[in-house]
Image 1 (spheres, one colour):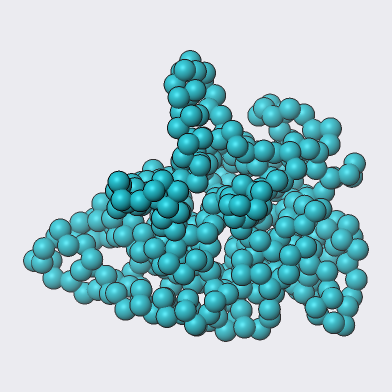
Image 2 (image 1 turned 90 degrees about the horizontal axis):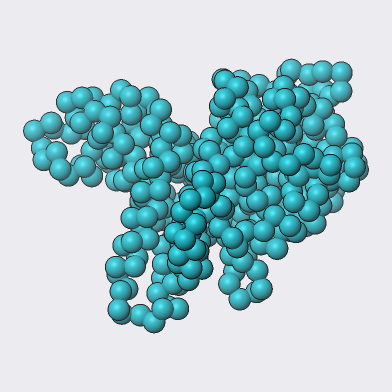
Length: 415
């Protein structure tokens, strides 16, 4: 597999055996990305939601299948999982490791963190240093720095309501942006995250009406998200994105960025050079953290990717799509293959592989525990099944180091 020192855990998880996916007893995943003998796609064929195995049982199977052995040399310990999103540096209350069963113990699951590559994501300038310090403890831990859409209050400026309401940048302190860039320059292994858009954030719900209310709060989220995307693009860092009930706003930011790139080079560059410029306006990869969108949203995101990376194919596909107007079920971009993982995260044009931009992460805590209705759970499962396997990521999304292993194992059980 790739070295655990890779700059992005989205690259580190790759292996011929499907490191980040659960196994079945008949020999793993079939060529279509599902378990051998699995029924055809269709909600009525999906397994019962309650049949997902526990994180403890998932880790027991993963460690057994991976022939996990105790090594005195850390560099030789097998990497069994890659956690592509979490907040263990916050060291809050343990969720998993103290809820043991007869198959595992807290000590065992904590110690097994040596078999993981993980990403710890800051949420505010107030915890950037903590994230960096935590990540410095091991070469198998990478930091991500950013401003989470819930925590824009940490960068709000004191404003006079009599000021020009059209200048939304005045609502924010901007030292954080320079500080973020300085950290990215100093720490080449740092990613950008957790960033994004969230209509459910308390920041949005409680933003003062006299300062513009919810509408202004969402505009500020978009502004901060866009600024961080620009930094990630400039420094060529992957990003991890929080997007809850804000798919339209998220797509708006992406489309505006692409349209501005097109306008900036219209008629001024050869087509090939123009495409390179468009691509440089975006980070090398975007991971959709604990994805709660629908299969339709997956299709829209991948269609945008195709427009950015392969515009000729997108245009041709659009023409064929218009000729098939009566078809009700939208197709994923046709360059996607669920067969043998021909595309790989971090691949570049010219090496015989298709470049990809978007990946989709799932966590046990968000996509399973916090899923509050059968309808939502089934939609989530449908979305996960619509994603090509080589774009799937697993996340612990935990807030204590002792939970990383079981949280990630639980995510494999979900996937």
